[in-house]
Structures are given as structure tokens and as C-alpha cells.
Length: 369
Ligand code: MRU
Image 1: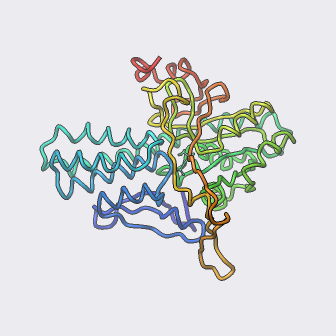
Image 2 (image 1 turned 90 degrees about the horizontal axis):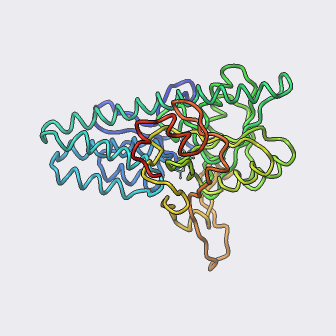
């Protein structure tokens, strides 16, 4: 996608061919800055503090984190240490473990002297594949939006609500939930996006609104609590969100608050779609509420907000009286029964074991029942 006319992916190699560049998402939308990662530790820290975030981009960064380790010391011990360090950064997004598993599979059987080049090539392949998967999700999701648009009065925008950021910043390019929206906009289908601000870290207000604005997609940021009211008023035609881990049975973990939007959508007959590339499916799990690990993040993300002052300086502000406790579960699980459809790179399917098995028969065989 383009920022001020220049095409960017969210992760790329520096001119030297080995260091890894990313966009610092903790600075957006106030500053567009890049960070250069030169060690596995730096890659792990970038994931942990959310310089990079979003399930697919976490996986891609972890893959390059392994490559950075192999460049320094391509031994078995160093490979296992890198996998463990990166694997411990964020618990919910399964793309992290998928990417690390793929790196181990590719590298473990190689002679140490071949590992560095192979690791960089595999990380690059993971990135390129992510772009292709997201583009395909966009094309399938475009048809869903086209169908909804056909039911609207001619020329009336399709109002789409989204939560958190599942756009190009959360992936290598295009995004998952936002890819269909970009393609619909580019195809001339009038769309308007309700952007949940997504407390506590405000990925909607800070990232999704920034992305949509940069692409010229009409959007309005709303407080997280506004979505149900807008649905009751008939102002939401559909919801599209991303996911960090989806079970083999179609339960969906996504940013905290997604479940409440799914409940409100269900109550109001608003279609609720989840867009995901197949590396986000955890084929080993059958019960999302029981099995998906939910990340607990620092209470400071709830007690404090950051924003830009009149003087242009970015500052952090405390919201709570000193002494009040805060809790910060970062994800929740939306049961499959509340999901209208899963938009994947192979097409749109019902959120169920059968639906996923129809699209991914080779993966579903042997998956949890
Ligand atoms: O905590 P984050 O910002 O990494 O959470 C991101 C999300 O919840 C996204 O919706 C999800 O990763 C889907 S990404 C295409």
C-alpha cells in the first residue's frame, strides 16, 4: 500500500540485505517512522511491545527473527533458542507458531552452513505468500460486499463496521478484513467504514483510520460502545473483522470487544464476517473458549492513553485515579454460531468444522473433531 505516494510493505530487508526494516506502529498515526532490526532479541522485542502487531505480521517478523539468529550462529542450539525466544512473545496469534514451525521444518535438516541463506529465503517466501493470501481474501470478500451493495438503494454506501486493525499494517500487505474493503472501493462500490476505536491500545483509531484515510476510503471512528446502537438504527450493513486464531470448528479469537460486536450483530440481523488466511487456523483446537490462550497485557495500556498535544508532541496521559486496579485481557473468543461466514483465500465458508473441511480438506483430515 502507499504512504504519500510511496509503496510500502510492513516488513522488508535493508539495503545491506540482512537487517530487517519495519514500520514502528507504536508511533502511528502521529509519526511515520521505520525501525531496523539487527538481532533476534530486537525482533522479539518489536513483537512484544507491538512495534509490529497483527497476527500475520507477527509471524513474518518472527520468521525474520530466526533468520537473524542463523546469520550469527547456525547451530541446532541457536535455532532452538531463537524459536523459544520468539515463540514466547505473544500467546494468542497462532501465525507466530505456524511461522516458527515452518522455519524449524525448513532449517533443522540442513547443514549449519546452509541455514542462514535458507532462513532468509523462507522468511521472504512467508512474506510473499502472505501478500498473495490477503489479496485472495480481498477478492472473495469483494464478492460478499458486492452482494450486500446490490441490496442497498442505488448509490447508497455499504456501511461496514470493523474492529481493531486487520488492514495492511497487520499483515505484510493488503490486510485481511480491510482487503475486501480496499478492493470494493477501488471497484467503485461506495463503502463507508465504521471504525471501532478499539480500546485499550486504539488500533482502530490509530491504525485503521490512518490506513483507510491514506487510501481515500470514507470512514468514521466511533467509540467502541457505539456499534450496538448504530446496528439498532440500521446504520451497519455488515461487520468484517480479522482473527488471531480460529479453531478447526470455526470459533474465532480476535481483539477484545469483538465478541460484543458479534452479539450485537446477531441480535440485529447484521451479517458478521471474519476474514483470515489459513495460517490463522489452529487445526489442533476444537473449542475456542476452552483452548485458545488469551493474552493478558500490561494494566498500563488501560490506565494510560497516548496522544498528540497542541504542540505536536506525543505524550502519555493517566486516566485513572492513583490506586485503582485495571485488568487488560487483550483478546476474546466469538463462538462459531455468531459468525455468518469465514472469508479465506480459498473462498467464503460457514464457520464450522464442515465448512472449513470443505475448503481445506488436506488440513482438516486429522484435525480435532
Ligand atoms: O494486539 P494486536 O494489535 O496484534 O491485535 C490484532 C488483531 O486483533 C487483528 O484483528 C488480528 O491480528 C487480525 S490481523 C489481520
